[in-house]
Amino acid sequence: MGATLSTIRKHMQFAEFESLPDHPGKRELLRGELIELPPAKQRHNQIAERMYLRLREILPDASISSLGEVHHEMGYLFEDGSWLQPDVSITHAGQTVGDYYLGSPALAVEIVSESNTADEIAGKVETYLTHGASEVWILYPNRGQLWLHTHDGHAEKHSATLASSLLGGTVLDLAQMLA
Image 1 (tube, rainbow, N blue to C red):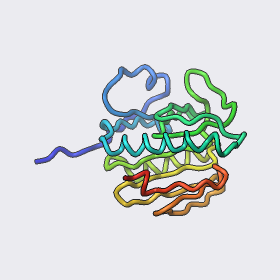
Image 2 (cartoon, rainbow, N blue to C red):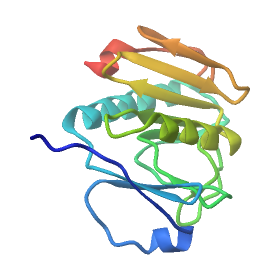
Image 3 (cartoon, rainbow, N blue to C red):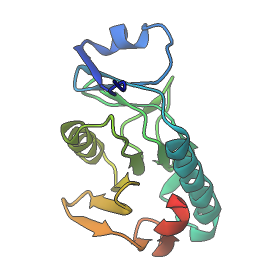
Image 4 (cartoon, rainbow, N blue to C red):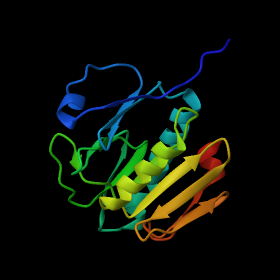
């Protein structure tokens, strides 16, 4: 029998979460619920890396003063004690930072893996948008789709290209990201 992937969930406060020992995989805290995921697979990491590099390339050209830096796997601490680590993110210009960035990034990109649940993804989208994200991109590699969620509650599906108003209308080729 093959091994099944599962997400381990447990409730805790941020101080307890922050003191957990290192382990393989990814940990996040979503509204007091610990989410532990297995290590990301090679394809997931390649897609995240391509997205990160493309956004780093776009950002200076877009000359958008409201945006800060592009990051891969950066941690964000929210007022409700949640701590999330989007696969790729762009901060707000001048975003407050301590040990972690405080509040939501301007853009959070989550690449969905088989170990993610629909409820977990929806919770992340809601948390990012509630705490100041302008856009949240949820990329489904196996479906070749990206859902763009905006701060006004709008969501739209993209399957070939994505034109982001946050990035000044810059068009991203999704097939290139997923290749």
